[in-house]
Amino acid sequence: MDSEIALLTVFVLAAFTGYEVVSKVSSTLHTPLMSGANAIHGIILVGAVLVTGHADGGVELAIGLLAVVLATLNLVGGFVVTDRMLEMFRGKKTPPGADAATTSPPATGNGNGNGTGPGGSAGPGHGASAGGAA
Amino acid sequence: MIPIWAQLAYLVAAVCFVLALKGLSSPKTARAGNLLGAVAALAAMIITFIVYELDNLPWILGAIAVGCAVGIPAARRVAMTAMPQLVALFNGVGGGAAGLVAFLELSDAETVFPLAAAVLTVPVGAIAFSGSVVTFLKLQELITTRPVTPPAGPTLLAVSLVAVLVLAGFLYAGDGTSAWLGAVLGAVALIVGVLLVLPVGGADVPIVISLLNAATGIAVAASGYILGNALLLIGGTLVGASGTILTRLMAQAMGRSISSILFGAFKGGSTAGGGTVSDRPVRSAGADDVAIMLGYAQKVIIVPGYGLAVAQAQHTIHELAELLEQRGIEVTYAIHPVAGRMPGHMNVLLAEANVPYEQLLEMDTANGQLRTTDVALVVGANDVVNPAARTSPGSPIYGMPILDVDQSKAVVFLKRSMRPGFAGIENELLYDPRTSLLFGDAKASLTGIVAALKSL
Image 1 (spheres, chains in turn cyan, yellow):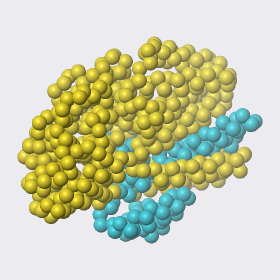
Image 2: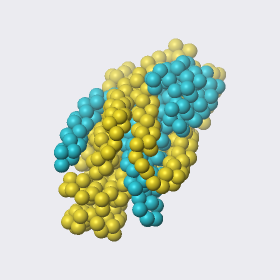
Image 3: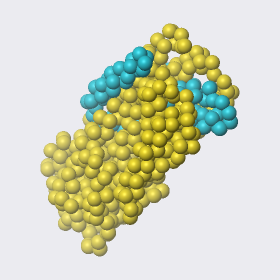
Image 4: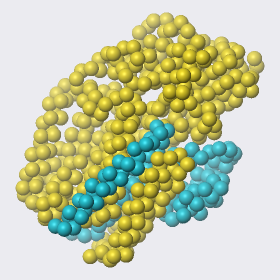
């Protein structure tokens, strides 16, 4: 029971944190913020993996795997789509030809997550994104 | 028991999520914030695989690979204009996943709180899923964007809501051991999600997406509680709380209240949105006429809307603006908070076309300037400049803050047709004697104007 109360405490404090953190945002960023928050709840993938890892029987396994696929879509797709959105905000003096070059390296990088840093600095982002990741 | 180092690592990941949200709230740090969130999520996944002894590992990895194979290309290839519906869909599948996780945990949850959390998460996840699918269908215009009110809608919704509560009660009383009861609960909740979102009018859909986003967050938090996993709990709660406040901020920007969005159509107040097109005369103009109006103006304000985005004309409008500037004309863009389909959507699209930030005016600034503007060029926007929002209390958009283009000396609309905008209501401004209309695809019209302007 103690650990349950501890979790409840965490829940309440996290709720206040979430509320405070975004209480002042310009409307310009509403879309990326919603999209980014959307990606964060994709962390349900951890939960989906845990229940699938302890599934007994075919039906439970099938349901668990479905949850894993859906959660992966949410997590990975969410972060990639948010990154693409935010990439647009940076565009100051990007030559038109560089656009294609920018899109592909970070995206492959995002596929395995930790490749994002190097991918970002390879593009004409002047290493800004890599610095941010570190 | 999970080793201490892993618990600490989860804590670090949770802190990264907080920082990611914080970063996303400011333009300078937004991208870094998002990357930080992604890195934290990846680290959390790796830890999960190392720490827990999992069966079915090849299957799980295969399922993750499938999710990546579908999700990454979808996220990379989606047109900027279709972004909102993709976000809606990603949110929905997240909610679905949380519902399924809770469903599988039903029989394992023994103590009071986790069982209650599991019983509640199944329907919340299901509602987030089916509701998001309906918002996707609306935004993709696979179903009508107008409010849909089935004849017995309110009754059906009430009945299915009660059914959800009763089923949840039985499930809880039976210690969550009855799998079929859980399945029925989920199925009825899916229906609730559909009934809840169908009556929402097109213009309000983004707010509903945000609301469902918060719901998914809460479902994820509850799943974390059931599994005793603090990271899920914190991540989900953060999204639940920030999603709730974001929903309120968005609703404020549109001058709406959440309850009027969800239940407004049921009250039969949407008759003004019948979408009938009257055949009164309008003044239509050619590209040459518009070029002359613009070319001899002193101050031009461009009002871009969703139509501009659909036609992929953001680069052409930038070209037109540069031409006008070369002629010494003051050109700015007036951005309505919900221009496009989501708050901030238009800023993303114009940034894509390298339009300088300084030229983008927020609504209040723009409204101050419109009074002294010679020509307001409205490209593919309609509802956000509709004076009915100020003048006609019966209108579905009444009370929504708009750009007062009717205050400028002349208005030019570039429109595909006389078809009403997303909210499905007619715009009186189109029939104003100071208004000229140039019909056609926004990009084709703009290209015509640019060509005509060059030969002035």
